[in-house]
Image (cartoon, one colour):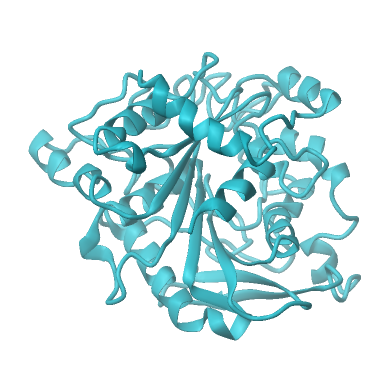
Length: 382
């Protein structure tokens, strides 16, 4: 383990005065009670009281206009040919043009609004509010699976090119775009940045990327972590402790209680569709049933050794399988890129006291232990 470069990344963040922030004690106690599982529903219930009274459901029923005073939200703006090629765009009403742009690539089934329970509908608008409060234009992507291994990454490419061409209308700067992926969103974004043939005519189009609690194909490096597939973030699917099990241990967390009124399966905000799209699906760490030569050909590592895109790698302490240090993937990826030179080393961020879901549900709350370091890093990237 290359401690020199790990420490250098942390020192850079510490100088911004943010790494001292801690998860509030009552929240951390609640997260530790839930345990090291992937639990959107119970985590949403824990963090929902810290959010504004209104969320998208209030807006849909006509009880809140504007939904978030001082912020204009453009919902379901189309950026591509697929029915789910849509984004939500958040822009603060006050302020000038040429603002930093932040794209969010969600995990799970790819929903830009969480749907397991009604309390979850508050997320990921929370990241949008936080971004606008900090001078950014926020673009929240609805993600969907594809047929070919690189289809999800091609979708990211389509979005980046759309943002480059259109974000000026929303006061964004097309030359200062960041992207943040969490969980299963890492596969599409990670593959996009690592496959230059997917870029548009203006190149990769991103200043920096945050990869949070996920992984993608960096062969021949093989992190000593869980294999690809449903058990990526814990025990095999269908067993307690696996991704999607609730804190009550009663069964898979695939409820449609939070599906938005009037939305049907296949529509953004509607019940989830069956099929691929998890961390081991297309665009993930590598897939299964593919010959080793083809998997190696699909690797992103050569391009990452050449890229000028700045990288932050984040691990939640309460992610399944994490034992008090950075994930095996993040550590291996970091160490490999550091071999290119110190300036190529990713920033490393270990989220003490955070879980797989709280790391994103905590944004725009009194719990600034994640948002603080990420904001400091974005500001530092030139």
